[in-house]
Image (tube, rainbow, N blue to C red; front, side, top):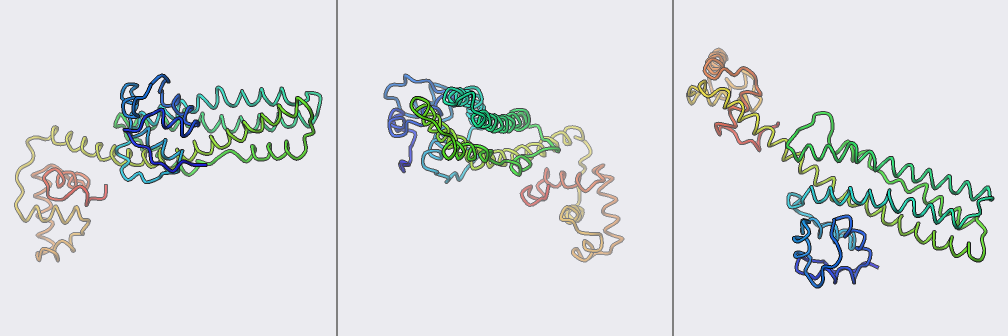
Length: 318
């Protein structure tokens, strides 16, 4: 049953754990060690190098499904990456092998159905491992490149999002077969029940992990992509200015009007009608603009217009 309390930075960390013991695993994923006494969430996070806002965003989401993140710019992407990477390590390195060991101990190795159940579990584990390894080899490095302000034209987070599905179909089938068809008694029955309990818990954990990626990680990376692309435009503008410091001969007011119209996507005829001049005069203005600025492309004129505050970057389609 969910605790519908919204946890805040000045709540004591021990209170979160007492209310929700399932948070113990997430502490490790965030790199938070036990032994924090009665310190607040903020104090613990600051001492252990974890972003408080990001930690609480994940905690409040996983405990209560709290989704009202209005400003993804406040999230620490490095903290989120650390959490997801450590969660992968926990699940792949500990939970998957642990459950398989439980199954081996609970099943009769001479039973053909038992061997098929182990094969089904191995198929499930392989699918989960493949999904997480893809994230580690492709998605996480892509995000790290964005943090370095490197723009990629070959990949984006929506490409990942379109193929981001859960891999729990095999697990549901495995549980169903064990419950319905596998006979056991005595010690093995207790072992199998304990194993099933762990399977259910880990199914819930994996489902929540996927929801954190879908509802927090992916939207945060979309925001990071937008910011990085804006920074890339700014860098190109600065480079252009530095490379051409002396060719910015002042334009006349009419020439500026022509530049603005061109940036807005108008044709020569549309500019002539808009400014009440002839098409030949528009062509003459364009020739003079190119000569003064040494800029001949629409993209170059757009950058010039942004730099010189003739247009606002927010109104330009980049």
